[in-house]
Each structure stands twice: as C-alpha cells, then as structure tokens.
Image (cartoon, rainbow, N blue to C red; front, side, top):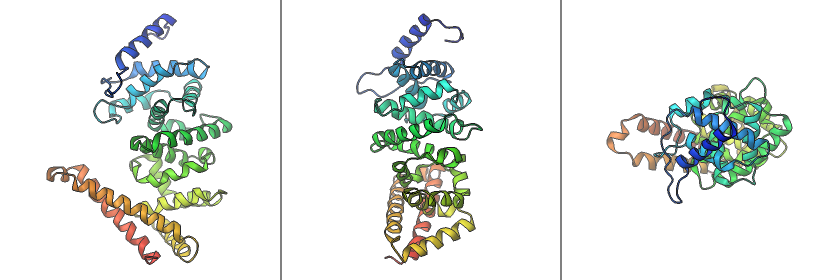
Length: 318
C-alpha cells in the first residue's frame, strides 16, 4: 500500500488483506497489534473518499477504524497510534465528507461508535482549525447526527461516552462550532468528569468559564446554561477566583427561587461521582495506591468532595 498510484486491483487486494487481518469471529473482540498505522490511515483516507462520493465501503472503514482506535488489551488508543493519527491530514474535504457520511444515524451503531472515537482523537484538527472543516449547514447536520449517535452508542458504552465528552469540549471551545450544538447534546456534560484534564480544549473552556456562561445564557432552551453551569460545579476547584465568585453568586440566587432543583441535581451527580471514585480507590492494592493512578484518584476524590461541600453549604441542605 506504500505507492500513491495504486490501481483498483491493488485496493481490492488491500481490502482483502484488511478483512483477513482484522475481521474477528462473532464473540471475539481482540484486534491484532498494528504498530504505527500509516498504511491503515492511507487505506482509511481512500475509502472515506469513496464513501463520501456514494460508494458503500462501511465494512472496510469499520475494520480500519477499529484497528486504529482500540487495542486487544484495554480498548483505548495507545500513544504511538494517537501520534500517527494526529500527524495525518484528517481535515481534507474528502476525509471529512466520508466521516460525516458514516456518522449518519442510518449507519451501524458500532461503526458510528468507532467514528466517534476517531473524531475524539482528531478533535483539534476539526474544531480548533484556522478555517472550519465544514460549511455552517454541514456543521448543523453533523451535530444533529452526532447527538443521535451518542445517544445510540453511549448509554451502555462508557468508553464512547468519554470520547463524546472529548468532542463536546472541542466544539464548545470553537466560536464557529458551539452555536451548532443541538439541545439534546448538552446533557453529556453530566459526565464531564470523564474529560482528559490535560486536553487543551477542556482547559480552555474552564479558563474561559464566564465567556461560555454568557454564551449559554443566550441560548433559548436553557439546556446549555443548565449543563454548563453544572460542569463548573463539578470542576469548581479548577476555576479562577473571578469565575468562582460568579458561580457562587449564581448558586445563591438560584437557591432562593426555582433554581434549587437544578442545584440539587448537581449535588446528586457530584455525590455519585464521589462514591464512584471512592470505590475505585478502595479497589486499588496498597502498591497501586502509591502509583500515579492512585495519586490522581485521591486528588480527584478530595476535589470532588470539596466542591460538593461548597455547593451544599450554599443550598443549606434544602
């Protein structure tokens, strides 16, 4: 697959090779280690172009996507693969058009789940690019289809949920993309603690919390404000002093009126996350507790408990 002037016969042979290498029997989920996936990415790029032009290559695309975003051990991207994907041009018109076509709600849910995983990896290429990778009407359609796909794939798939949160923060950072987020997507922020805290868009969103509060206040349905404001309580410890003061002021006003039910919702969700983190800590061995994983879990537990207590004091346990 190295030459750029491959014939149709070459591509047919490549498809047979991909299917032979990565198609698993029913019930077997392991995928062979691919190493650095340069050639698979070329294969994916070519077939996404064909898919976007109207040909059906979903089975080949699914195998290529699966091979690049999961491993046989932990269903997570590995650094070598992630680095290769991020170096690849995933923002070309044909690549984007092909990815848009496979996120369509009519497609198989597993294929859409893997597409979401891939888009999460290339989030910066798509949502933090100098020029948008789609036209405004295409953005709106894509966000609608993505919302449906996340609902279809996320409910029972924590891994896909995490990827969806990554994509959401990428969109929220972008002034072009955030206005196209559909109402039903905002509730994914109930799982905002799944965000990678070193993700650039996640940090940007918290650093610009007030700007995003003003943006969500202008949305007509109230869902954006509800879930973005809740996110700020989940991550209250990471906000700057100005944002903290504003978030607490809003909570005091809400506690005196109709907003109390939303504050109690946030408390309940944070409490669930505290309990989940405690269970994860209890499941560590003594040696694991001394590793970076254990240290991160303890820090998260302390932060979440502190955020919960701060909000609970404002509501007065009402």
